[in-house]
Length: 528
Ligand code: HEM
Image 1: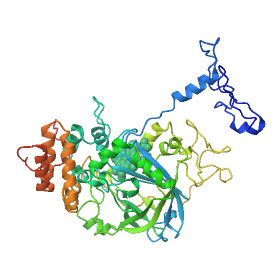
Image 2: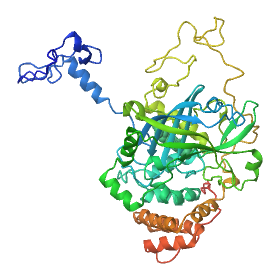
Image 3: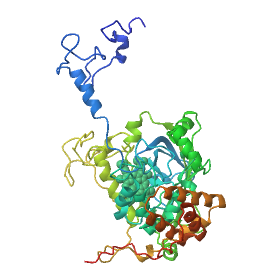
Image 4: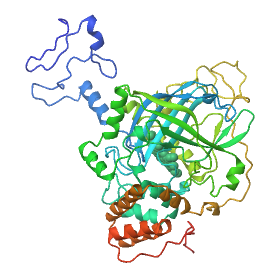
């Protein structure tokens, strides 16, 4: 202790007296140069000016100046934790995905929960969808299941995603509202986009204000494919079921909690894991074949529709346990990069036009957000299995090819630095035959926008139905353009007339508008 004294003599600032025993505590610059005085810049005389020569000051301020990276364009506010996924059984009949082959096997995971519309500093209990993104570090690469806490989505085609997000986030002139759907642009867009009505019903329900992340369901939303080692294909929808049950708060509570503790959800997760009360979810799958898809009333590639659990039961195949908080929020929670295209042998995409757009979008945005093509070298994103490829260089390259070989085919000796593709175990896309003309077109099988909205509303208890009505009234009361409010009510007329009447009454709309056209084609009406 004697050899490690803080010297606070007036005028000299703090100074560490070093000896070999405490060298590990010695502050250095980023270049490793030991620092003698971290309190004072280098000046001429006792009162300056400060010298440009002060490399220690310059390095410190330079690094601080560059601390911020762009926040995510959506899902900016999030909170992550580590854990594992454990299979209940071996599922080789369903899929050859390595993580599902052995009963009781654990796969490490990183999970990030998020809100969608709010900025990084927005409150946790906004009425919003919640992201539920899981990165499985499997022995055959990372599989990202990038889902939400609501099983359907606002739009059917990725073409509309930038419009949806522009309309949902703050308006470009005034810069508000920052974390709410209560504004003209959002309701203007969604009421002109009838496919969003099903999702709107969920978003106005108690589902959109979870009590905490621990009491939330999660959904992969899209239909994916499972492929087994005999090349048999099945469709699959993924579900996360919280073991502690599904719980929400009411709007009144949400408003108070947001004011008293805008970090309520992240604090809840931190406290639970810190106390050893590890939250758990079960992974469920709805597995169905082409025959079911062909006779199902809706298109299974339409992300605004779900498959009722009564039609295809959810089979639980494993559990997710979150048991470790991050060591560093920025390094892990901020830098983690989920992407729907991160997939492993045994799982495949479907032609869902929303999923197809997502597969491009994540990689593209992360290349910008994380500063170049090498963000898979960041530890939170790096697979925990061997990576062998010939990708090289670029900003921040950490793992370049070793030796002389960086191309294929080549005639050099094969070893771990000279890999080749593997016909038997390499990723194989499903072989579904496809033919047709190139068209910009929305399939007629995507056209029924109301049936499932009605089904959802009818599945709610009376209290929950009242909450939905109150939510529409509250959100629309912030909308200043009467025609937009009325257009929303005209859609509600197709869902439930008493709901529409209640909302109209709450908003002081004197007479009920006509029902919205039910088969409104989502096509442009501009003819040149
Ligand atoms: C985040 C695009 C639809 C779930 C993001 C990000 C983008 C994006 C650009 C930010 C990623 C980053 O900076 O790391 C899109 C597009 C969509 C779409 C283009 C539709 C065409 C969806 C849907 C879901 C979803 C349907 C749910 C099934 C998420 C989640 C995150 C996210 C959970 C946050 C991931 C994290 O925690 O880092 N999305 N998204 N997105 N998206 Fe989507």
